[in-house]
Length: 299
Image (cartoon, rainbow, N blue to C red):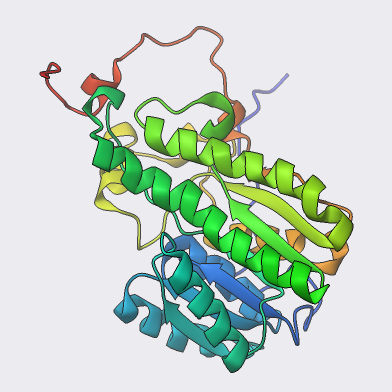
């Protein structure tokens, strides 16, 4: 008997490969909030590769302009337009939809990727800190979803929504009470609206990313990763590797595609089974304050 050497999950196909037939999204308009950076841009890239006309929305014009240029250069991409938008503002959201319709047509697919987050012990969260995350991650997602849904309901046209979620919507998220509560609401919107709007041809699904390192990660997240895994992030994943951002993009393009027309109300976790990890013997509990390097709580 020989000892097996764990090798983890194989690497994905190379950057530039497509998970669906060329032109799957030709003639369709895809709106991605938070599409100018990070995983939102990675998702937008895979829709572009399949022929979509893109509308990317975000709060920073410089990032959007750079992403617009990058996405327009993707082989197979359709037209790409960008719109500055704070998704907490319903009037501005309506203006973005109007501008998108004038530039490339009404969005057929909505990817709700925009969110806010930062680590904090729950007791340290001020009312403004709580609102900053919940208002963007949950309420903003609802405002964009509502605008998309109402327009399709009024026009009698089908549509598809993909909400980017988080696994702590199921498990809770110590150190992220604000974000975990908001993402639980985002997940519930998937399950509620799939039933309400399904009869009108509108599908909605969720997509949960695992660890996908990218250049636009915030310093909070990057610092946390370095504290937790300074030597090897891979060894902390059951897959023995982290995800490549294009893998999340492939999942998003499938969920929104004609090949998933009977998939609705589902949340797909793309993390190499990391969220299902359990230890045979639980490690010692380290309070969140200690994990974050905070001193004793002082009111």
